[in-house]
Every structure is written in C-alpha cells, then in structure tokens.
Image 1 (cartoon, rainbow, N blue to C red):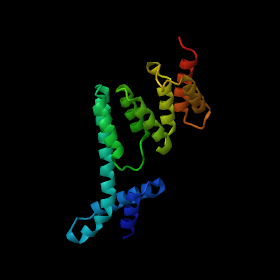
Image 2: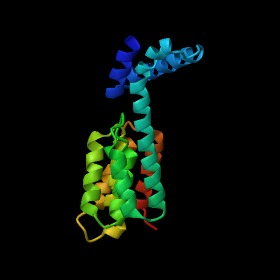
Image 3: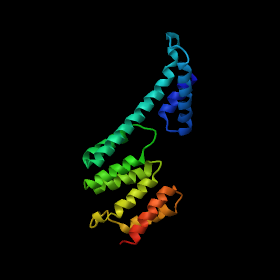
Image 4: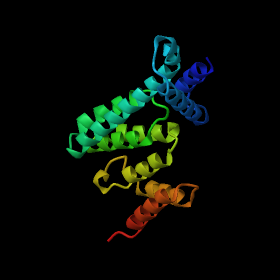
Length: 189
C-alpha cells in the first residue's frame, strides 16, 4: 500500500528527493519479489511497480527520440531532426532537457528560421533547470557572423552574455567554453 502511494506520487512529480527514494524502494521491492517463486498470491506485489515502470518507459522513449534527432542532425537532415527534438520535448519527462532546446534551435538556425531559434532559446532559458546552456547558445546565435545584416546579429549582447557566464556561479565547464568564446570574439584573427 505505502509503496503504491509513494510510487504514484513519484511518477507524477518532478521532485528528485521524492522519486529517487521511490526508485530505490521499487528496486528493493523487485529484488525481494525475485527471491520468492511468483505465485498468484504474490501478484498483488506487482501493481506498485507499474507507475515507476511506466515512467521509466517514458524516459527511455524521450532518450530514444533525442538520439534519433541527433543522428538526423549529424546527417544534415535539419527538418527531420527538428521534428524529432520537438517530439522529445513533448514527452512528459521529469525535467525539460535544455540540450534538446539548444539542438532544436541549432536546427532552426540551419534552416534559416532565426526568429524561432531565438524564441526557442529564450524559452529554454526561462524553463530549464540548466538554463545557463541556453544563455550560452543565445550568445552563440547573437555572435554568429553568418547572421550579419539580420536582427539577430548582436555581437555586443553576445559579449555581455559571455562575460556574465564567465563571472557567474556556473559550472567550470561552461565557464571554460564561455572564456574561449569570449577570447575568440574579443580578439578575432
């Protein structure tokens, strides 16, 4: 009973401190079930695992769509990749993976839809847990020399964003990339 309630709550929330223990309990529950011979009297033990199994299936499906989109992107099928990234983002996963938004934006840029690319990154910067990667991608969009002569070529805005990323409370990996881009933009060859 308790595991069923915890599993159901964990399956519909995005709170890691709740669903991580629920997965651990479900795993322990499954191990205990494997120690017994599965007879009809023990079938009552399976329903509490259903919400977590369904959630795991959804997460795996989203991962599959992301991988398919990445494969299409590498093959330069940007329209196909964008469609798959959109599908992956429509799957109700625990978090909105910023990388899907960044890649979707890159597909849109390659297809020449700069307005949608910009809007996608701005949205990701508002809703994603690791929104700083969307900010980094926005700086890349605004400093891309291929977009000179458009409303989206804003090198000063890009430099400001890179500086904020370097000086902010962000992961070192991001700061390293931002420093590299800042040097490239401030000291062109």
